[in-house]
Image (tube, rainbow, N blue to C red):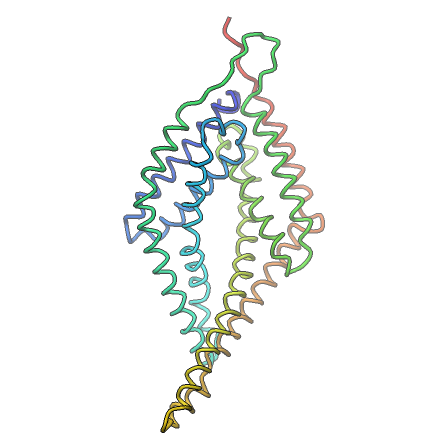
Length: 335
């Protein structure tokens, strides 16, 4: 039983399992046909980093700061390409909802994002190839052993992994509840994003324990729903900023070209008319309107399901799960 083991042992075992998952996903990256490999690799790294943060008191003695910084930098390097891919996946089918005059903007932004995504993935592939094998080796070596004090006095306090996890769960649940309570409207991007991060941490904490704590399965399912909802809301916020910047870039490109053509010795009137009629910016604005409507729908769902007391029952059940983690005592010490 994992929950009845010493805290250091439980934390190291879970971290090693998550490292195995990351290593397996990395091997799948070699298969160009595996479209989910990068996503699964990113998730595995996030789970591992979340575990290292949650059980910091149990793992810090094994992991030097330099090693954790290497892991953090590599995990962050996986973000730009995947984030751009998410934007492309949402934008691509939107073309069917646009008027013909707006499709130039749709094509323009997809071309721009596709180019950025390819560059990010190429850069990431080289970096992972260079850095991950050595990082995995060093992490595995450090996580495979730990030092602890063993008290033979039967009266000495003895903490279990379940007790340590319960303390972490209570703290993380309070953090999630705090951030959700601060989300007041559709524009509260920062607090909604922090709530999403907190929801992921609670979910990642509970998932490795479902075999021993099956009552937590409905909580994990609801956390997954909240995480997806907040994740898409965050994507909508980020895409709105992207479309705003793209509109400015497109307008600047058109103005520069129009300016250059106009100053030619014999300006081509056809080119001048074409540049004046270009609809890239209007197409980008039309996409921004569709994205804003998505954002508002997502916030309405968040408000209905989680805000203004919508999560009260969930947090009560989460507190019960924390209590259940305490029901796994350590075995008695050897005589």
